[in-house]
Length: 115
Image 1: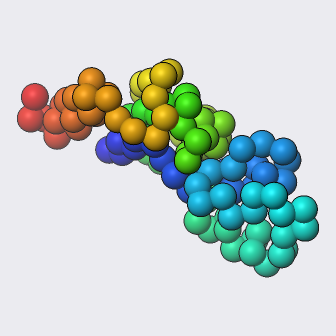
Image 2 (image 1 turned 90 degrees about the vertical axis):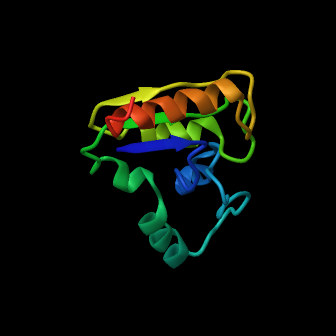
């Protein structure tokens, strides 16, 4: 199974299309990034591998996250073909609420048959 909270390294190319790119913001405000760097970044971009997931997945993030923008995380989430759950916390940034942690933990325990 996969349980991701504030998934990073998603949608690196977004900045080239005037969208918020995921952490670590490799190409932010670069009008003409190196083509080799763009190509290599795809190897590390979660969006390019999300479509290969075949396990249950649980995702959560904050809508006010300025480290890992929600648009970048949605790019990966929307590519996942397996069963998945999304638990957005609309008022959070790049931090956890206790309730969010508890949901994440309970889901993981259920996946392991321990709850």
